[in-house]
Image 1 (spheres, each protein chain N blue to C red):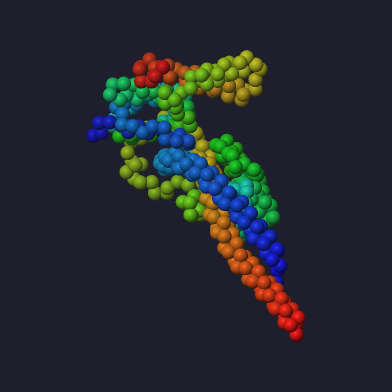
Image 2: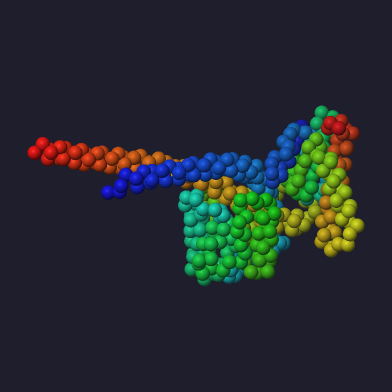
Length: 290
Length: 142
């Protein structure tokens, strides 16, 4: 049995860990508030943007813009994996990496080459250990990013697509559903997905475009890619903080439990030692009487 | 038949404006266009400039840079990269941006940089103009 001092040291250690996890929980919840309001303010824009683009694309033939066109032969797939830079957020990053890996394996089984673009350090480190090629990486950006990052990564995706480096691009990110729920989500970025069956009423009604449909698409499509990326970034960042918050909350609870059970062990050990000491004294006294 | 238009201006950062208005004038990429209720469905890319709307006979101004507008009979949705209501425009900052841009136009530049500086200059000038027009109309405090 561990000595009293050992157990006491351990209790002190666990209490200190608890302080840290509790502080991290509070920091994460403060950051979450910021990240959550950012994604919530961005969603209306992204939704409207998608609506308009889909509407517009359904009016035009897919051949008007290369970013809309479905390629007949799909050889290489680009996967954009968005994760956090830092760990200590439960299984959040592992879930994202597994989702990406699953997608990659599935595409590979279909005989396609898969290449990765990683935003966030955790995903980058994970993909490095696999055999898949890493085309571009943005580690250490997730703590503080703006549209610029989405724009840069978006340019790589667009250029890669136009130069036939990729024939299809998907994004894997942590969708922020609510504080308790984050989902690893996969979405197709390119070719831009358009509703196949555009509602007939909308398509037949007269619509004016300025400049032409083609001109608008040429302007909107690259931006659409970036909007998608930015949304992925914002979602992932909010999810990361939410995941860290609940992970740290659990850790704090576990610390409490551990302190409880350690205290029990400590008390038992203390009692046992008192009992032995008493026995010694009594034994000694008996012997003296003898 | 709709009597008014719902004007919605959304940027990546937030919803700037949502209001029932009588008329919208916007800086389209091919020139300014006006929208009254029951306008034919219309989609246009936007340039840099002032968007204004009329409400109870008064003109209100919003600075817009880039993006596009979707018009349907009862609604105008503006998705802009930058949108600032006249009262939120920081004149001081715009003036500084103008000075900076003018300084840089004097230096030798690459073609791309030249375009960037020109764009910055245009934005600064339009910001100031937007606010000043709004002050002139009396819909914004000086």
